[in-house]
Length: 257
Ligand code: HXC
Image (tube, rainbow, N blue to C red; front, top):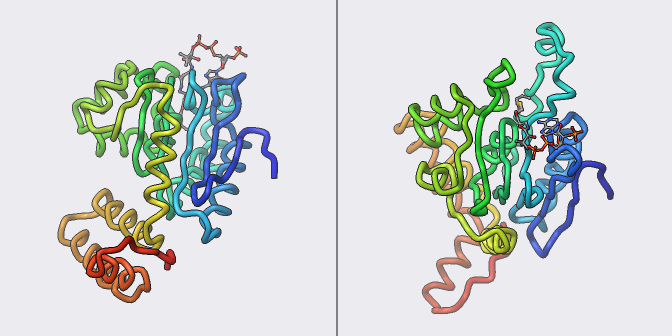
């Protein structure tokens, strides 16, 4: 299948999505959202896919939501269409997702990266929520996920001044998991995804779900959720295989169920 705004391929058990609107620095328009949600739904339904990488170009992961598309909107249209709410489907993907970010990840681009489970950045990456410079605020989770990721003071700084943060500051702040040289970015992200995809799929999905609970809830509820997911994994073939392989001093052969 071909897409107008994305390049999509599978590499073994990894699904690789490359945002592909170079003429607009991968600005996120309606069509891109529709295509992305369709591809993610397909990957989620495909037992052969264990992890997903989302990346952009060397110059831009994504320079934000498409300003030209949003400019004519009024309040009523934004509200009636529930502008930006469709991105919840991207954030709701249940399989592990890694953002491989090079260049600009601004506004909705930064927000899309934060919808992924972790971010691997090139040394050239620049993150920011510059919506204030356009007379608006982040609308795809920037004020929420950024604050949880880097704390109130830095999130306020970025959202109120619109300034950009380089990869070193982003790593220092906890927004980014790893920073690598630009030429190593995709290999590093694909290797991480391949590693995840080699483990038990149920365990990886539950690990994602459990860490996700820490974002959403108080500690006691999160602990309860973690424990139930932990218990449930003892019903899987892969738990028997993983633990038996350890005892037998061999590599596990996970069946991803
Ligand atoms: C539409 C965009 C775009 C965007 C860049 N382009 N960003 N088009 N929406 N977000 C287009 C430009 O108009 C231009 O097209 C082409 O991409 C190249 O961009 P330039 O500006 O010429 O490149 P450069 O000088 O290198 O500057 C790069 C940049 C700048 C610093 C990233 O493009 C920029 O500031 N972009 C906007 C960043 C931003 O404000 N993002 C937040 C958006 S609001 P033409 O046709 O002119 O050559 C947002 C809200 C999300 O994300 C919430 C809800 C949905």
